[in-house]
Image 1 (cartoon, rainbow, N blue to C red):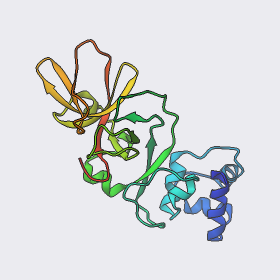
Image 2 (cartoon, rainbow, N blue to C red):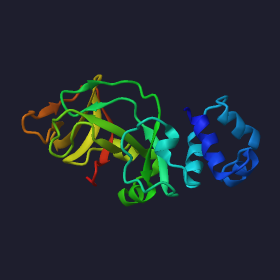
Image 3 (cartoon, rainbow, N blue to C red):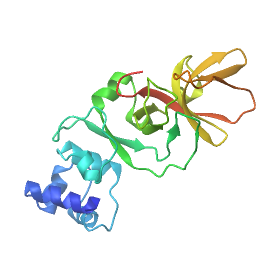
Amino acid sequence: MNVGERIRQFRESRGWTLAEMANHLDVDITAQSLGRYELGRRSPDAELLEAMVRLGCDPAWLLGGSPAPAIEMRPTGTSDAVLIERLAFRASAGSGALVIEPTGGTGSVRSELLKRLGLRAEYARLMEADGDSMLPTIHHGDPLLIDVSPEARARVVDNKIYAFTIENEAYVKRLRREPGRIVMVSDNRDYPERAIPEGDSFRIIGRVKWVEREL
């Protein structure tokens, strides 16, 4: 069942016509446009999906399949879930992994959590960790909530965990500031520290703010 079919199933479960559902959605949409979404002639955007969540639609079910675990989700029917972009590449918490161009996708996060972290939805991203070098803090497959705001990417806060790339490899590590350089540190002591000297192609993706708990 695709997203359009799920939109139709949700509408019919409420006993609404296309026009009635369009009126209930707090976005600018016509019954005709909604019908095109249901028929698969158009792909729904994040604004429409968020509006459906506010109507009580389970976001995990709406997106289909078996997505990565939702973060601090309430039961179906909640109105405070926010859909945020899911990064399509996996950042390695082991020896590093080649960066893959993000392809989109969304995950759901409670707005209360974003507020507590001081994180705006447009700068929030979900990403999965891969590897064991950040044990016991981060486990393989853990969902990570990343702050990709310009402020988070502009400077390194000493000893905080970041997702970043060096050349074409992505990592999730602690970063420690030292005179003239930055050192990446694994919580798992089986992995040695590594200095990032000047000249390396170092780019911060964002700061890891949450992994099953606030960091």
